[in-house]
Length: 190
Image (cartoon, rainbow, N blue to C red; front, side, top):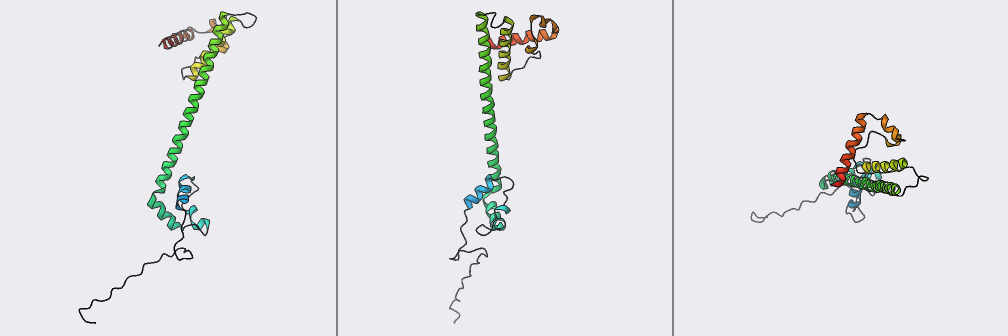
């Protein structure tokens, strides 16, 4: 070789991975989408180690492959996002259910009040006494207030059996009943 002739270039060999190989000599194709989904949607028992060949056997990627893929694609962040979305959806469902129950109970309370008022207008003493009708109306009002999240009376209407029972209430309790009645009327007008 003369000095002018360039040296033939040698092409370096690619380093071959030491992992599992298919019959054609290529690395096996893993279903990374399914593995990622299992990790992201899984509970705390689904770890990277649990998704590797060390735990599952042949046909699964090695722990180092799983860790590398997880790191490259931020599986931990995706899992946290998935869990936050699932928790938010559960909270929304809970709120919708509570609201649905409240609306239904408010309607029942209003119906009880309407029934009592109509019964008072056409009251038959053999069916219900005026005091029983008043208790029905009050119970309906209390149910409606509770369903709408309004304060409850501290005096239990069920304990009042006759108008004479009002005499057993303190002046403060009577004033509280009167004030709440005024507030309820004012809110109903608004």
